Length: 113
Image 1: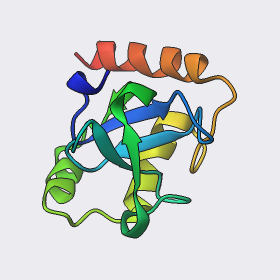
Image 2 (image 1 turned 180 degrees about the vertical axis):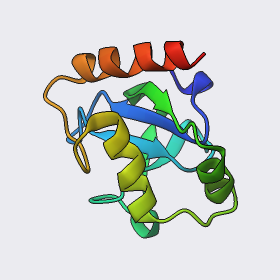
Image 3 (image 1 turned 45 degrees about the vertical axis):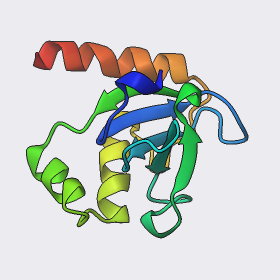
């Protein structure tokens, strides 16, 4: 799945000890590894490098202001938690049902156009 992932995507981990954890992609891929953070357990100062094959895209940052801050390297962990909370309704989300989470997010994106 790594070919379609990019900076600002909200992803769900599909493998590893962190399976079902929701992250924000904050770095471009290096050898199929993406830098991801959740703002709680994985912060910018200690981001997690995750293989793109083990990530499933569930959303994207919609606010242009946040994307501009992220691209400039000025986004902080509080903003990441806020963005993820808006998609999951739970800070630093680790969902028991990522398929339900994905089903809840994608229709909202389609409505936004």
